[in-house]
Length: 160
Image 1: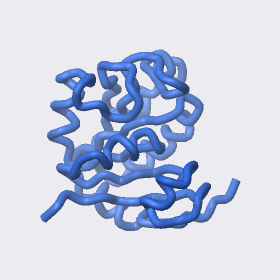
Image 2: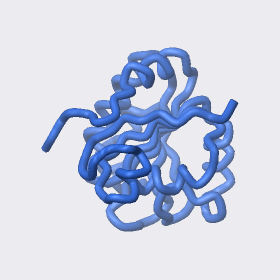
Image 3: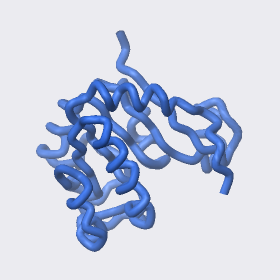
Image 4: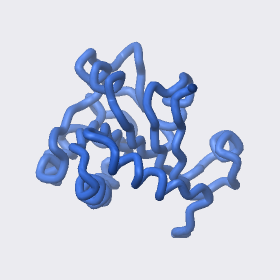
């Protein structure tokens, strides 16, 4: 696996984490949750609380509360919640009020994976969103401005 980042905004993400009180961490694939726990630990070392978010039910191979419980995600995150719906990415029409309240009030969002990227780029962010993903398809790669199959840490900011 290629490790270089085609878009590397890691230093900006670190600074955002240092200045945040709370980070909403949107998980992607179930198989990545254990690695995500390492990232959550590193984010927490910078100071903020981390609220881990998994899907509200099975959808593709995305992480659910069952997956979170199996790997003891709650031992790393300050809180683990779900989206309230088995939907890809963030779905403003299907996700629960609890999740949407947390989403809309989030100071900083870390969003793993292309599903989260594709859904979150449908509207302007209300707070900074750090997308951590691999550009697995041409439309997403073109949107980001990098070749296909590249790793990126890309931060989108609210309009001024």
